[in-house]
Image 1 (cartoon, one colour):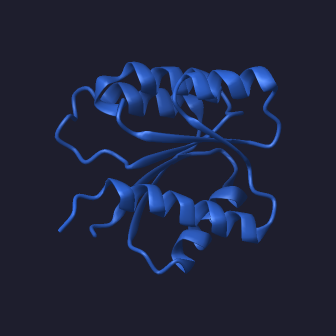
Image 2 (cartoon, helix red, strand yellow):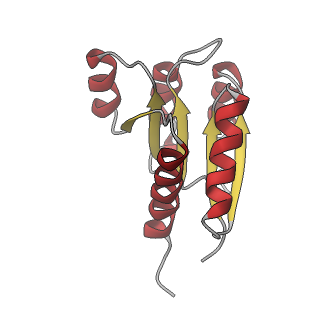
Image 3 (cartoon, helix red, strand yellow):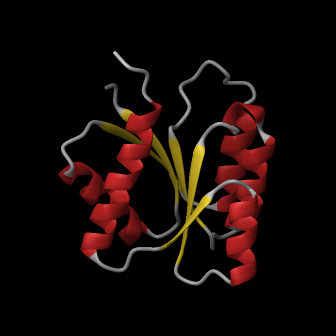
Length: 139
């Protein structure tokens, strides 16, 4: 399997550090691109139209509560961009309302509570790599 390409849209450096560590503990190859806020995330999404031949992430991890533009706005942009419509999106939040959870699911993304324990980060990391592995063509 080639390295799993993950895009993480997250403004909290501690959450990023722990997720990166949890991914590293799995012993799998991965390429982690980090986007720090909603504004840069929207720029990334719009740039994908011109970069159709660049490898796309197999999964996007999206924090719901971002500075500048919230996760729902970013998720809508992802779903409108043809180059990204096939990409799995996992939205994380410690405090999503039932209405937000419904909107996330309606847009075809998965919602998960943001991990609060190391074991939960390990589970999230394993799930993200499993998504990428499921998308790899058979050898």
